[in-house]
Length: 235
Image (tube, rainbow, N blue to C red; front, side, top):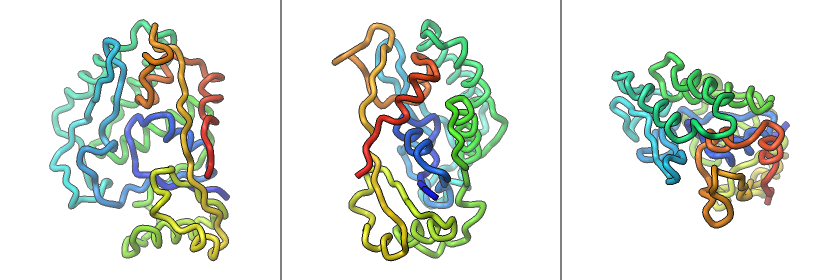
């Protein structure tokens, strides 16, 4: 069984979805410290031909709290504002009429938890993309919070009886392949390849990569997206 573990990211870039599609079980690592100015509640869209950073507002977010304990801001206007921003940027995109209802369903999901919002969004994105990976929130199951870093990741792998663990390439210096091998677990790192597609008239050097998955969805059919999900290397 192949496993991956990642913090919950809202409407993440395609590399995150590639990792989820590559494994049997994907653990949302939500009982670890919240990261300010990270990707948990932020991402990028293409607005008026430019990269635009959006943020889901939070209430009393702090690196002293677990992600699962961080709540959305009380003012619900951010939802309608974000939807208007998406409409502004993508209403002329070829798959806007198909993708916008999914976007509305995700952004309007009734919760005050950023972790729950991300979990719901990933379930919906997986269904749209045909990803059948099992999704688990770490706060709901493992009870191993006393462990840290690599030891905790390894313990989750063992609890899930994983034989293969895949981590994003950014963590290559944090994990020891020999330690995982001793536990009977193969360790690989995923390097997402840059994927390009027509963003209105932006191609080649004008293409803006690594935006939210919404960008890829707005410009591509399911068959093309499925091909993009396989555009990565394991090292």
